[in-house]
Image (tube, rainbow, N blue to C red):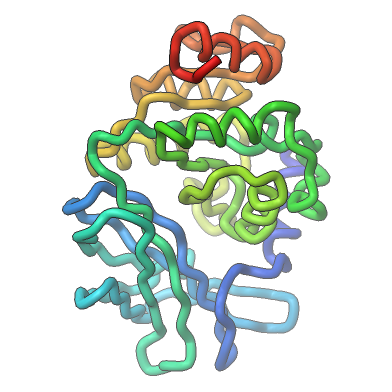
Amino acid sequence: MGIAKCLGWVLVGVIALAESVCAGGFALGARDGVTVVGRRVELSAKLEKRLGPLRPDQPRRRLDFQLGDQRASGLTDSDGVGRASLCPLTTGVVTYSVSLRGEPSVQATGRIWVLEASRPVVVCDIDGTLSNMSGFRVPISGGRAPAFAGAPQLIRDLARTHAVVYLSARDQSFRPSSRAFLRRHQFPSGPLLLNSWGLDQGSQREQLLPSRHGRFKLKVLKRLQERGLKLTLGIGDKAGDAEAYEGAGLRSLIRSSDSSIGARSIVFPHYARLRQRFVNEGLLPR
């Protein structure tokens, strides 16, 4: 994907409908998280101002988070993202709330997937891996994208023994369409971890380049491992995915016809081939 297309995604993302609760001139969107029981997890939410079709980020505003009886707060950064660290005490999908201090009507709810430390985790990319749609069309109709043949059933079968984490370099503004795509094809429930694009800092502008997406994903995977998650499999389609999965020590599985992707990755041309491999290994039943 070229710079022009990447910038197009940014412009569409600015005006995309966010998965948020909007009130009082603000839009507040809570993000997914994942951890193991008894380990702290970062809760985060993005605050924007509603100015017609624009959503400028709101820095240095205090956000208050609540998870059960636990409370914490954090200031939003230059991207309008506020963070706090709390510790879930039970497994399952738990909800947390976040609100803008001084504006009680501006609030949102997020979800945390709390896993047993022993449960293996499969990490899945979306674009070109699960979603079979050209990148330039995703900002407009990504929620209605077709899935690659065999992908939904394979991931559902893996979910019987693994937790599923969806990790994509898509911007946070594509959360609603990404969720719509996963629901449409009945992919199993799991946290959706997305990138955060921007233009005001060099590190943000780097995220517009596909060549940087592997670094972003590797950083996320390392954080998940630090929380105690047992990451075992990574499914993707690009060299950046192989870079991230191999760098984090996952078994890297890349959907591609290019057998040279990755130094240690297993390349498969279609999901029927990957399923057969898993069946032969006993990872899936015959």
